[in-house]
Image (cartoon, rainbow, N blue to C red; front, side, top):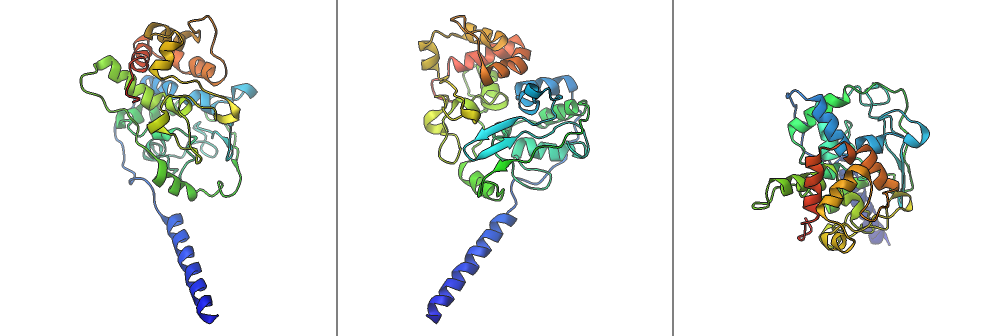
Length: 299
């Protein structure tokens, strides 16, 4: 009996030590300063492309730009987008550009805590220092809003942020934005946007039991498990072609929200167009359409 007690005690000590190690385990590379001067217009453009306005502005309740409060209902609980205005107490007014870069590219808060992957930081990992400087310059022009971010409503154990470190180790994947030789500038620009800033796979790719994308088997094959119970259709090239899409009609839909059969996008995709892709240049919308209509390899 005494031997069993010692074995049990040793197991408890080891488990506790392991848990303490995970909790203390730092994530992401060290913060490096960025000395580049940002372009406000370019940053605002990238913010539109990246969905910042749609995700962090509660239009349904008359919320102010980037003041947060948009609810995302997931199988693990409800998340609320935070305040990204320049308010020093409720927003990002006290952040440095380096902390902003770490949040955007690594999904790590200024306190070193991991963000939930509902924040689409995995798609932004390849943003350049100039991209970050541009975004930072644009965010500095946003008026402060004294609205506190709403606490997430996550059930145990999903409310334990240290567990996200294990999730990251198991499921975090780099964005597929690297250019492919021989595909041309337009196609590669589309790849950079689709697989990066516009993060199309976040909604149009199926997910596993842990909420991670099944990128190897279901890339762009659609999803029935969007926040709030919404669905996203497949946007692989075979499905798009079968439904009557071509590059011209897809680029047009990204500007107007109108589909080839005369219908209109609704729900989340309607917001993507209204607050995001409708602001893009015609060249970038054409690049997105070109890539999606010639993406037989699934990225």
